[in-house]
Image 1 (cartoon, one colour):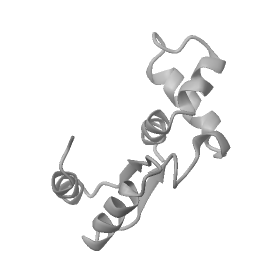
Image 2: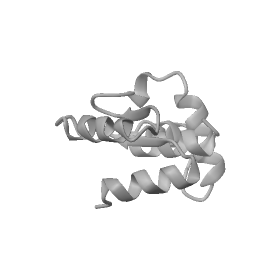
Image 3: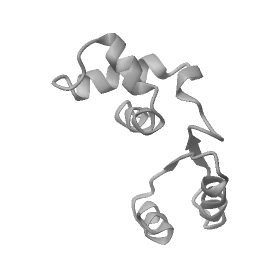
Length: 99
């Protein structure tokens, strides 16, 4: 597991945004609060306790980005939507799509 301090420092150096994958146990919310206290701006939580990919209007955009990025791994449009519905892949797809 990556130490939170390391992630904060990398984000600070790169002027990056941070997305966290929710586990539904409150730990991610605590990490988001710690990151916000460091002055890095808003933190996005994906999955339980945050953005649910299956109801997000960007799901199709993310599926298309995954399909373009991994044509050898994504069989078809339905498979792309299934993959995009996973919080970690949804977050990665948003990044790939420039969101």
